[in-house]
Amino acid sequence: DISLSPRVNSVKPSKTVAISDQAAALALAGVPIIRLAAGEPDFDTPAVIAEAGINAIREGYTRYTPNAGTMELRKAICHKLKEENGITYTPDQIIVSNGAKQSLVQAVLAVCSPGDEVIIPAPFWVSYPEMARLADATPLILPTPISNNFLLDPKLLESKITERSRLLILCSPSNPTGSVYPKELLQEIAQIVSKHPRLLVLSDEIYEHIIYAPATHTSFASLPGMWDRTLTVNGFSKAFAMTGWRLGYIAGPKHFVTACGKLQSQFTSGASSIAQKAGVAALGLGYAGGEAVSTMVKAFRERRDFLVKSFREIDGIKISEPQGAFYLFIDVSSYYGREAEGFGKIDDSESLCRYLLDKAQVALVPGSAFGDDSCIRISYAESLPVLQAAVERMKKALISLN
Ligand code: PLP
Image 1: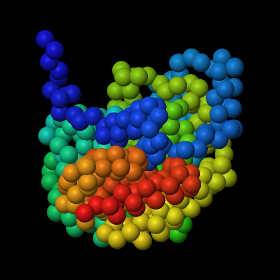
Image 2: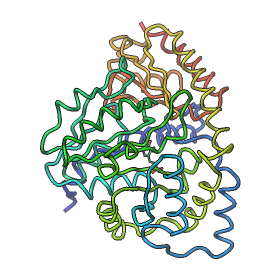
Image 3: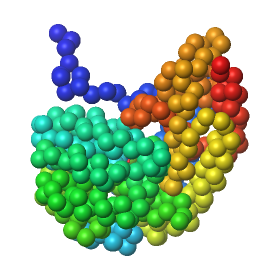
Image 4: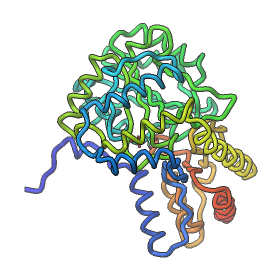
């Protein structure tokens, strides 16, 4: 009997991971692919952080840690959340996990009952709806248009809340759009949340440091009345270029995070002891990661500026200038219905991405993966010269469409 559980059958594999893997395989086979599909900084982990990990190994700091994470790291996280985000937590309100992804899925599993609704603004990060399905909950997708900079309309939210609404997932700065929720908009959302006592907010703040002034980051839990309604998730992968270390965390009311910890104690136990030492060093870099992080943010900003300018010059592409993260989510739907010689018709974001991989040898992710088929996602976690080459190749491929 080779049948699988209905739980697995209800979940789609991650498209971003699949496309990154496909592009990596092509590159390995010698095809000169420009890979702009991955959600991973192109920088190395800052040396002081890496050294802390190396020292941890040298000093034999290689055993199991407490399930919730080391006291040293949880205290450092509490300090960071207080100083940078204006939210007060004690170490028993923090669970450190193997990446923010684990923190998120545990939170969804911990609070959702079968039949509950998880409200997810689209474009969304690929994993949110699947996490809801894993919990036997129903994802309720709320579209946000590019003309509104992909921000959720509070009126739409209010009209969709029912007694089954359990979780609203917010991601700011956003993957895939780079949109940043202004404080005033979050306040409006908080007003609505406060009227629905069963609704919690899962606030994914993993891109908080990758933000371009004058945009600023607001933690949802810092808004009046929202501390006990919010589960805040953050991590080390993006800001500190630590994707491979696998380290993230959740902060929230003890009742909920203890439940997350219970799941974790049966899934994986505590995160890597070595990564946790490195995490302490990362938080020791100072406010918002100090110079090590601001140097990377500066580079991301230059690339964003270059891409926004370049794509604005191409007819038929619509752009909302991203205010954070390292993605550009452009509307390419005016190309749908066109044909390419030797390729056939392009009728959606997936066929356009296949065409661009084939013709321009640039790997991108179709917007359909993020719940918006009008768009494609370009990750600019690549050097400027590579991005310049990618734009040239894409321009040529798009212009040659009939
Ligand atoms: N949340 C968002 C929006 C992301 O883009 C990612 C990574 O791609 C994650 C969470 C997970 O990060 P990690 O598990 O590496 O901490």
